[in-house]
Image (cartoon, rainbow, N blue to C red; front, side, top):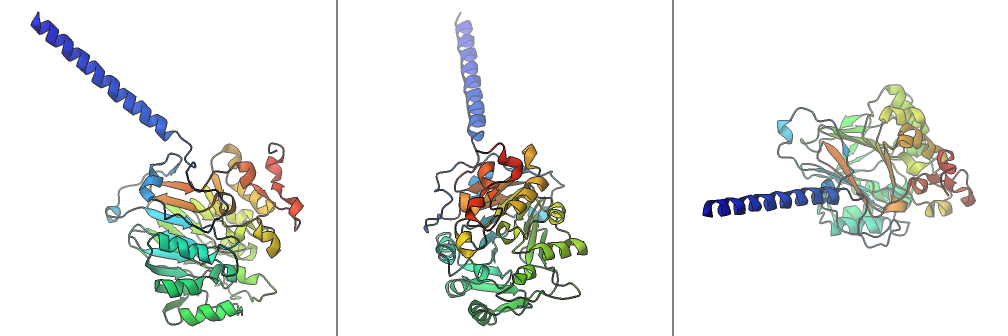
Length: 386
C-alpha cells in the first residue's frame, strides 16, 4: 500500500513539473511576440538630452529582426561581438556612430553647428555613451550639415585616422577651412578612388566608395550649387551575412556613375542619400542596393526653413517600390519621426530599436513641391492613409 502511495506522489510531482515547464515556455513566447519597436524612450522629436547607447544584447533579444541565411562558421568571428550602428537624430544633418564587432569606433559626419540640437546633441550622445576615442572619422563631403560639428569632435575626443574627399570640388567655406586645419594635424587620407577601410579584422568588408573617380574627376562645387553632394564618400560594411551601405548625400549623378561603373552596392540596410531629397534614391541605384531596411536622417520641419522640403514623395515612392513595402517585406525608419535609430547585428540577423514607432502612412509622407501644404502620403498610400 505504501509503495502505491509513493508511486502516486511521484506521478503527481512529475505532472506538476511538466505543467510548470510548459507555462514558462509558452509565457516566453508570448513575451517575445510584443511589438519590437515599442520602448520607454521619448518620441521622435529631439529634446537635447540623449539616452546612453542602447545595450546591443538587449536589442538583439527583440523579435522583429531580419534573419539572414546562415553560412559556414568562420573561426575569425569566434571572438567578435555584435556590430552596432547608431543614426543620431541631429535635425537636417547627418551623424552616425558605428561600433565594430572588434570594438573599434567609426564616425560618419558630425551634424551641423548651425542647427539646434544637432552637433551639440551628437556630442552629448557620444559622451553619455562612454566614447573616448574615434578610431576612424569619415567626412563624407564638405557641406556644413555634415562637417559642422567636426570642431567639437577634434576638441573632445582622441581622433585616429581621418578620411575625406580632399575637397576635390574646391568647395569654400569657414567650416571647410576649420575642418582642414584640424584634420591636417592627424593621420589624414584623401580618398581618391574606392579603397578598403582597415577598421577591424572581424568585418568581412569595410569599403569606402566614391563616384568622383570617373574620367572627368570630381564635380565642381560651390555654395550656389549642390554638386558637392555628388562628391560624397559612401561606406559599405559587411559582417558575416549582414551588410550596410551609408550613402552620404550621393545624388542622381553620383548614383548613376556608381551603377555605370558596376560598383558592388548590394546591402541589407541603406542609409538613404541626401535626407530623402527628390534628387537621390533613383530606381537603378535602389535596385543595385536591394536593401530590406532603409533609414532617413531628416527634419521635415527644419527643412522648410532651409528651403529643401525633405523628404520628397518622389524618393519615398521609389523606396516603397524597390523595397517591396506593399508586401510588408521591408521597413523604413526616419529620425524626425522616431528619434535615434540603433541597429545591431550578430552577422545572422539585424535588429533595430527606435525612440518610438511610426506607421507607414507617417513614414511614407513627404513633400511634392517647395510648399509646406504639399506634405502628405505618397500616391501608393494616399487612398489608405487618412
